[in-house]
Structures are given as C-alpha cells and as structure tokens.
Image (tube, rainbow, N blue to C red; front, side, top):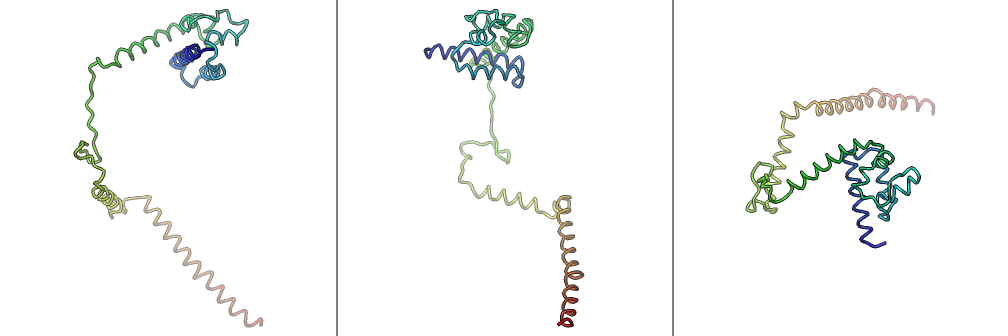
Length: 199
C-alpha cells in the first residue's frame, strides 16, 4: 500500500470523525466507537471499505464510495451512525455552513483587526521600552506591599478564618496548661508521696 493511499485514507477518516463529532458531540458512544475503528483500521482501508468488511451482509453500500456519497447512503447512516438520512442532511448542511464560514472569515482579506495592548498588574501598557526583566526591585516591592496589606491589623481582625485558627490555638494552649497543672503535676506529687512509704 502506497503512502498516498494511506494518507488519503487517513484524511478521509479524520474528515469523517470531525463531521460526526460536530453532529453527535465528542462523548457520544457512537463517536467513540468510530474513533476506535479508526485506530483498528490503521489507515489501511477507506471508511466505506472498512465498514463494508465490518458489517458484511448488513452493508448494502459499495466499498468504493467516497465519504460524501457514503454519508448520503441510508444503509450506512442507519447501521454505522444509528441516524436517519434526514438527520444526515441536516448535519451536512450545518457542516457545510460552518466550513464556509471558517473559510470565508478566516483569511487576510476579512479586514478584521483587533489592536491588543497587553498590560501589567498596574494596568500600564507593556511596550518594548518598559518590558525589561531586570526590574527586580519593583517586583519585590510589589510583593512586600501585598504581604503588608494582607497582614495589616484591619485584615487580620476582619478575617473569620484567621480568628478561628487563633481561637483553636488558644484552646489548645489552655488545654495543655490545664492538663499539666491539674492532671500531670498532681499525679507526680501523689506518686512521689506514695513511693517512700512502700520502700
């Protein structure tokens, strides 16, 4: 099999998959099955030849049909895609309109020009004059300003999450101090007084 035939088959399969993805969506089980069939095929057969061999006696279409002819064949659309010929006509019309739109409006003559001015974090337009990497001082200064604003007393007092964390820390400290004073220390004192009598 020549590389031209393999390339032609691959192009036809990709066009077929693109067409059914637009009509059925990328996650439809039929679409996933067709993608699996493409991997199984390995560019060796055209779409018509592959499905003629796969469907055997259920296929009433010819192995030599082009993709456009195949999509107009009611046997192929019902057996492979599970769709009626009317659905295929609608999909074909939508697909053709989308392709026409892409070809028409995606060229240099469309006269659509959008001027994009990228800006930095201070909304200053980035130009070649102010786009230097060696300005480290301003960046570190900005980071310090941000940290200072986050840790300012107004933000700390107003932050509920931080208040909860501080409350949990105070409760843990109170528990530890209480446990040491009222449980651990008395046990040691009692143990030290009892030990000499037993000796």
